[in-house]
Image (cartoon, rainbow, N blue to C red):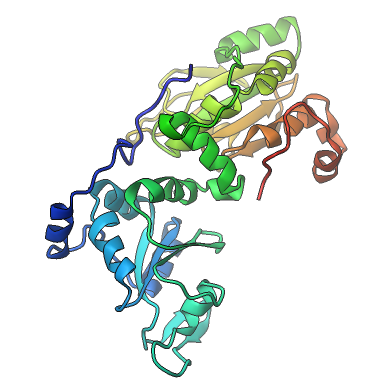
Amino acid sequence: MIKKHVLVILSLVLMTLSLQAQETEKKESLIKWLDFETAVEKQKELPKPIFIDMYTDWCGWCKKLDSETFANPEIANYISTYFYPVKFDAETQDTIQYKGKDYVNSQTGRRATHDLALELLDNRASYPSMVYIDPNGQVSKTAGFMDAKKIEPILIFFAEHIHRTTNFEAFSEAFNFVFRDEEAPNLDMSGNVKWLSLDEALEKQKENPKKLLILFVSDYYQRVSSILIEDISFTNPHIADYVNEAFYPVRFQAASTDTIEIFDQTFVNEQRGVGYPHQFVFSLLQNNVVFPSIVFLNEKNELISPMQGYFIPQIMEPYFHFVATDEYKEGDWQEYYKNYKGKVPRKQTQQ
């Protein structure tokens, strides 16, 4: 059985009392909302996703979202910590500058929608809507009222940038399996990767040369993604069997304080803060630190292109073969992936 973990955001048993909701309406919002232009400028300085609550004054479900979901302390804290939160009146008459263009409300008639709201919502104005803009400018959106339990995985999906590598259906299935017993799908997670320490792997490599697969995970950064890739992707029996066969697998906790000696160098953890990554992590990820990350070293301990972010087994299986069989040296990954026939059913794929 997979060990169940406690989420950073919620205890997964969420109760919002009607009395608490009524009292919250009178209080200042727990979320420190920004205007849109301020959020865009802050995102340039320190990359984080922008979270937009697209509302109107006449929308009853928008008020319910404020009084219940955004009044939940855990949800409010998570949004404030991992996003730049924006409260956007979709019918504002303000002029808003975005990407060098001035947006106004050029519509006519009662309840006219602002041009920028229409653009962000793909001309499908529905309230409340929540818009997510990642640091690369990718825009995603969801519509309708959501309680704390429903919005939780969606916030994680965008905050941890899982949307870049995996579709929401695949992520949601993994999330429910690990964190929500009552909604857990029936999955075969009987695989068991025989993880080695780095020293053990290097010693085995001397006796019998094989590539190293190093999984970097963190209990602090992208924590849920790290949990899911271990508890779902690497426990898939086909993935686990192939990893044990083709690689020397190493699981490395990013915040480790161990002293590492490799490449004729010594690496330590400078411990500049809670969860601060080890120098070894910075070195192998070439300062592009993302968790989880899967790094491959060839038989001569030379770095092969890593997989960075959360991946489902359907993507991991062909890429692991691509690396293990040395196809990566000359082959085209997209072509290889298109033609690859593996053991893991492709019912879920990348976006």
